[in-house]
Length: 273
Image 1: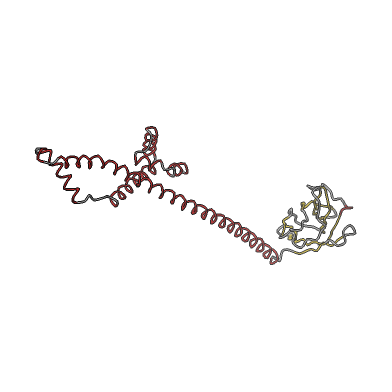
Image 2 (image 1 turned 180 degrees about the horizontal axis):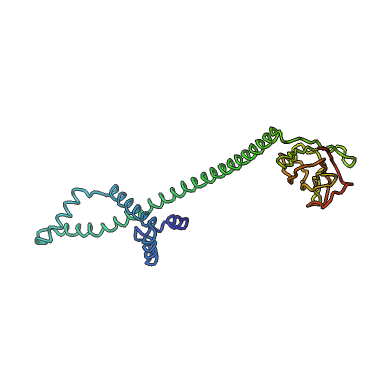
């Protein structure tokens, strides 16, 4: 569809209507018009515009010239000797100059069409730029709305968790390894869900080769509950692996991806259930 629009905007259709195209271009226009209704409709519109322009700008001959032309026509039915030689000469002048007027008319019509075409191109270009600007703004607004909707949904989930009486909030305090560290874990044994409060997380930021790993102590044995990163932009709640019961929770700093068993020397926080 864009190719057809670009083809129409080249001005070839106006030249076709004016008869100012090569034989190959004429065949090309007629072939495209037979295949594409949009080309055919544009040709019809140009022809109608040309006809309206010709009708509105037609030149009515003067009465004097009209009489001379009619007098010349009557000579076909009478004796040419009855009319002065001067009249015959003037008749030839009228016949000769008429094609020049028609040629001039088509030149002016073509020039007018070019002006209209250029003006239309400028208007369309400006409209195109404005539409692109509007689309960019709409896309930005949609992204903002999506972000806002996601934030509202996350906050709703957090509120629902806090209202859920099956959850118990467990505060994990810093160890000798990291005395200033602190974090909160929400645990629901009935729903077997463990959630970390990422927004309230206060742990040293981990590097790219390490991650924090949450452990549950069940009957004195550590159970892996998953890994997470401590970053400055951490927010919301993070769901960890499911567990039905736990005596305590602890976090250690492990190689990225986690370890099969906790590195006790790297334990940063711990709290009892």
